[in-house]
Structures are given as structure tokens and as C-alpha cells.
Length: 535
Ligand code: ADP
Image (cartoon, rainbow, N blue to C red):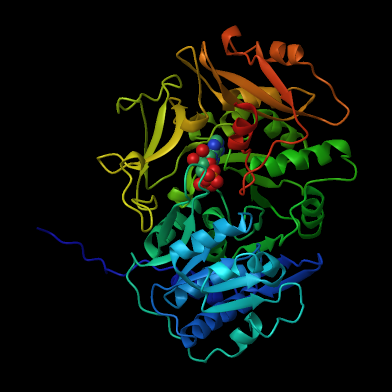
């Protein structure tokens, strides 16, 4: 039997850090502070400081595999944690600062976090759960510039006191580097643990020209939080290529983001649709005052991006691509781009492709499967649950009994998302299984209905939920937020929907709200709507 002659070297994110320090010392990291001033670091600073963090953690007694939690906004120090904690053999555990204090405490306890690195402005949140947690050390980033209290360790002093002469802690490629809990829309959140190997492969995958299309010329601004789903992998991708990073800190209001856009001119921005929904309102209200940087590209994911919104952004000069993924998939599972056969397509056809979740990412397998476990054809009609497997897809959850309903017998992850796939491979997500509306034995896609509602000129936001019905088992109910100063009666909206939906599919009820409730990751929170209107 012939054997490969290739060396067996473990994949390692430490190589990304080393290369960044050596090849891109002048690349920039811009972070917006709580007082809205900007602080600038070079990649050379980032390299030195990440290694100092690793060295200081080792000196503080960090053992291989120990969890170091972060409770932080997007900024330079969080990026240092992304690389410094694994460099010391630790596992970075990003805590979601939008969760309730009790939930954060539960998650940190479940993960057995030993140290906490936290922004000074988040200490009031920490005070609400500190009694429940035995962190050995709490290291405070003086993000606002205020003096760190004596009961805490000052992050800057911690770095300054790090022993010189740091060596990376040896590791295998399957050793863990970070972990993140799912948002727990159903039941308790569950932990996903990423490895050197899964992260390096995911980074190489995402950094392809036909996927995110990033290059050294880019300036990237992730609105996507670094505390959730690896910030979609963008920190690793940018460090690998030496790309300038622009971090918005705690200021995520669209007006603040547009000001930061104007100051730093990002070429690539990432975030969930709800962010872009509110920003579009500003752009439309005063196109003279509010402008996007010329030629900016946007990556939108985490929930469906309505086609109407993609068109609004096109009008304002932005190119929008959609992706799909989840905490369990590192998180990118698919990306929209134009395949070779579609390069000459009409604008309508192109926009329609970008309104899908795109095509499956390389280096993983994706299929759709019906309720009986039969794989479905890619004909744009058959729908089924998306199932995935591959080197950056989780095969289990941290420290819980294996859940058969989350994995198939042949080892695929069941995503709980229902989709159809067209002959070119573009995925159209119809719903999450738990959001599907089953009426009179037929399915109604809430995503399709929401997208069409949001294309109505008077509608700002829309979420469609199932409510129990004695005759039909479930009926759709549409929750609608109107644009300021606009009106639209239920009858008008029904007529608008009737263009694409059959009569039996149209909602009987419309509820007019001031805003659709948001989850901790900024998506429409349908559970809350079902609680309110479902009874
Ligand atoms: P949560 O939504 O509970 O916060 P995740 O952040 O892991 O958890 O989100 C994963 C889910 O987000 C997917 O399972 C899917 O339902 C939804 N999602 C992600 N991208 C898209 C998209 N482009 N279109 C529709 N839904 C999406």
C-alpha cells in the first residue's frame, strides 16, 4: 500500500496569529469606546498583547483545557482573547451579554468557567450574578478608561506583568479552543466546543473568493457580536489575511453605525437582518444625510433577509449577500454568490439568488430530508429538514447526554431548519421546524409570508406565527409594525399577500405592534409573540 509522504502537522490557529504578527504588523484594528472615541491598535500590538495575555494566563495558573469566559463587546481586547486564550491552551467561552443574569450564570456554571475577562462597563451586569459563580479571577478590561476597582484584576496590568519569553502550549489539532452556547430557544442552551482543526478549516473555507470574497484590501466591520457563534468566524478570517478590522464597541444604533461607516469606510459589513431593517429606515428618511460607503458589501445571516430589503440596499449602493448557519456549524453553512452559469442573469434573477441562503459551503455535506428520513431532490419544490455533516459541524453538545433527535443514526446534524433547494444548489429556507404553520394538513411558510409583507410600502417589520385553531389545527397570525406615518388595513395586507398565497393561507388576524420583540441575538422572537397571542 502506498502511503502519503506529507508531514502530519496539527492544524493550529496559533499559525494565524504568528503569521499576522510577522507579515501584517501595520494592519489596523479600530475600536469604538463607550464614549464613542476611537482607539487604534496595529496588528503588531495585537500580536504582542495576545501573547502577553497567554503568558499572563499561564502565570495565573491556567491549565490546558481550562475555560476562560469573556463578557465583552466587539473590540481589540476581545480579539486578543480569541487568540491569546487558546495560545495558552485555554478554551475561550464567549458569554452572551444580552441574556438574563440567571441564564449567564447557569451557562458559565455548566461550562465550569474558571476565569472571567469582562468589560468595565459590563460590571453592573456581573454584579447581578456574581454570587452564583465561583470565578477564580475576574480580569477587567478598562474599556471606558475608568480605573479598575481593587477587587478585580486590571487587564492592562495583567498584560504588563506577563512573564517574557512565551511559548505556545503544545496541542493536538482536535484540542478545543473556544466554546459557545446556543441561544436555547427551546429548553436550556447547549454548548458547542470548537477545535483548532474545525476553526482552521472553517476559516480556509470562508476565506474563498467565491464565498466572502475577502482580501487584504478590505476593511471589515462586524456588527455581528463576538460573543455569539464566533462572530461568524470573521476574526479568524481577518487575522489570517491581515485585514483591517473596525469594531463598533457597544454602539449598535444605526445612526452610530452610519457615523462609524462614514469615519472608517468599511468595505464589508456583517450583521443580522433586523440591524439592516432599522438602518434602511434612516437611509430612506434622509438620503442626503445618511449614506453608505461607496461599494460596500454586506453579509447578512442569522435570519432571512427579505428581498425587498436587499433591493433597498442595492438602491443605496450596497451589494448584499445572504448566508445561513448556526452555532453548531461554526457557523457558516451556506453563502449566496453567483455561480458561473448565472453570471449573465438578469438583475431580478440575481437579486432572487441573493435572497436565498445561498449554496452549501465547501468541505461539508448538506442534504434535505423529509419526515420519513428520505433524502429530497434539489428541484426547488420538495422541502425537507436541512441536515449537515463535516469537519466544522458539531457532533455532540458539551457535557449533556447525546440527544438522538439532534443527530441522525448515520451521524448528520439535524438543523431544525426546513428548506427547498433549486437545481443550481441555492437553498430557500422556508422555516424553522418549530415556527412552521400547519393549517388543514398543509404547511404555510412564515418566512415567505413575512418577506412579502415587508415588501409592502407601509410595512416596517412583520413576523408571522401559528396560533392554535380548533378546526384547522393552526392558523397564521401576522404581527405587523407600520412605517411611521403610514397606514395599511388588514384587508389591504390580505390583498397584497393574495398575489402569492392561496386564500386558505392568508392570515385571519393582523396585530399591529410598535416593535417585534428581539431575541438576545437580535432576531424576531416568535416565542414571545406566540405567548402573547397564541392563547
Ligand atoms: P439562535 O437563532 O437560537 O440564536 P443561532 O444563532 O445558532 O441560534 O441561529 C441558527 C438559526 O438561525 C438557524 O438554525 C436558522 O433557523 C436561522 N438562520 C440562520 N441564517 C438564516 C438565513 N439566512 N435565513 C433564515 N434563517 C436563518
